[in-house]
Length: 293
Figure 1 (cartoon, rainbow, N blue to C red):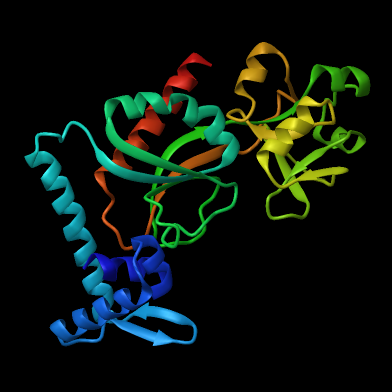
Figure 2 (figure 1 turned 90 degrees about the vertical axis):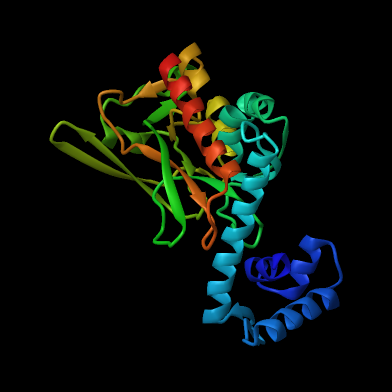
């Protein structure tokens, strides 16, 4: 059963074998024996890969749910329901996790001493099923998807620059004046970005094309802190620098659309207790950060 689940989630016998640390022939044989025992085809094999049949998809969903529930029942039977165990695989953006999740992670681990956490830091949206991810932290608008999503928090966004940059180049008082400034652009997918400002009933959209474009948040932080220009960023990204004055808010009487943080769970699985607990932890951590800001 576990082998079949792994094959569906990884999409190939070879990938499942690597995850299970066994040979590919053993995986193929296990699936063939399962299909013989059930008397039904579970996997369709083609040059493009493996996909479950309708029967296979139904079997996968029920088998996965059964294993998750059995694991949680075992924890409760052992009297360890108050603590979680096993490995939790988390995906998160590099800068957000470095600033707000990793520093608080010991609190979560202390509450669950039998739990291991594998945190995959990547600004790209990786395939949760292929990578075996239990819960992913994603920001912004979510694409249409049948994945389970839970809203965790929301952050304000600002135009930001260092006092040194503003002293050297002046401070814009309207969005249109941004055209006269050095802009640090952050767009992981490339291309230009429109910044949409609002003040009361007045809206202003500015298309920026700065000399410096970065595809990762760490690069944006480094460029802004090196006095290279004005950038748009969430309060999460520069919370400490805003508090201590190393970074100043520009156009403070204008607002930008906020950014949302979501916990995303893979398709076809019952959300595990570990994943739910981690999402609770992140939500509580960000509420605490917001209350002290």
